[in-house]
Amino acid sequence: MNAWTGEELERVAAAEELELTAAGRAVTIWVVRLGDDVYVRSVRGRTSGWFHRVLESHEGSISAGGVTKEVTFVEVDDDQVNDAVGEAYREKYAGRYPDDFIDPLLTPEARAATLRLVPRRRP
Image 1 (cartoon, rainbow, N blue to C red):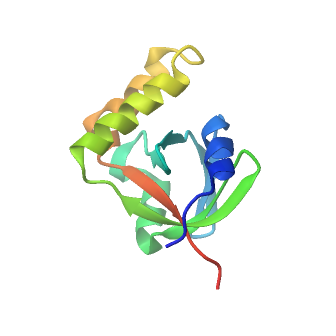
Image 2 (cartoon, rainbow, N blue to C red; image 1 turned 180 degrees about the vertical axis):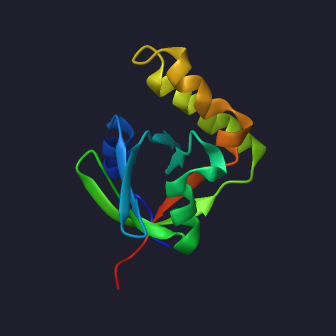
């Protein structure tokens, strides 16, 4: 698998929102960086329509901060990573948005719908 460049990580992490496209449909969501990885989470958990589309193929594309990439969506099933992703959401969006916008991203349902975005090489 391919990796993010430093510049891509910085630009995506600095973006307020990310456009994620899966199964031909786009959704705009919040995005966070954790080390050399990029994560998104469904505020509605695994029942969200966009999350179901992601699970159909585990592939799609993202666009944020002027970066557009084909990605593989990898489900996160690691409590430590999920804790860190939740903290990254709080750190990034606290002060910009009220807690009632951020808190839904920290629920068990949202944690269960955490995805790591892994860049794919184009054929």
